[in-house]
Image (cartoon, rainbow, N blue to C red; front, side, top):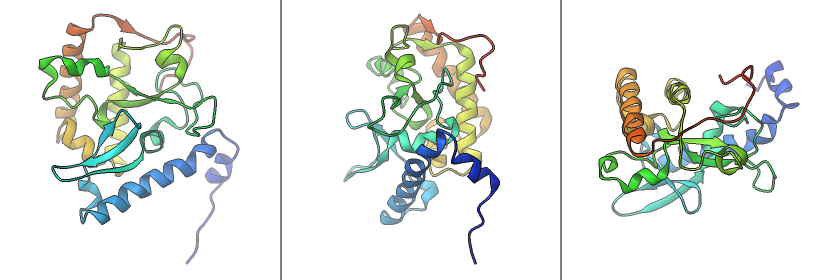
Length: 212
């Protein structure tokens, strides 16, 4: 029994993503370990986001357990790139390119009663963004991303679900049991957000840039 090193892994060592790999692996493992400690199947671990320390937590009526850095847990789909501009980002807290954890639909929506039943702090609504896109001169701040990014968010969430990422069940619980339900949930919530926060936003980039 052994471990085979593939060409893909060797190629990864020469990319920015390689620096983020250990952070992401540790985050996934801590999610699984926490499920074991709580005597839960890993797929049933339901987590939320803590704004103050930017971590993923497990919380029920009796306890509140910090699990992992939200940045580390969310990086897999984005592969070391900003969700919006695809510019390189880092998970290293000492790096000048350290990414922000961004609420796709702004956290300020929590103040409105129609969002009482929507978990704005849910994993489904969190992405990794460059500082420039999130709070730079032409940053997103509390604006709503253009509609094409909503489709990208849906694809991201479906990626976590289909790849059996430890956050799979959390996203399903927060957005819907079927792909159709999840798509409808995102569109309905997006439309509600636009009624409250009229201004839409997109990053400054060349039209030929890849947003996939």
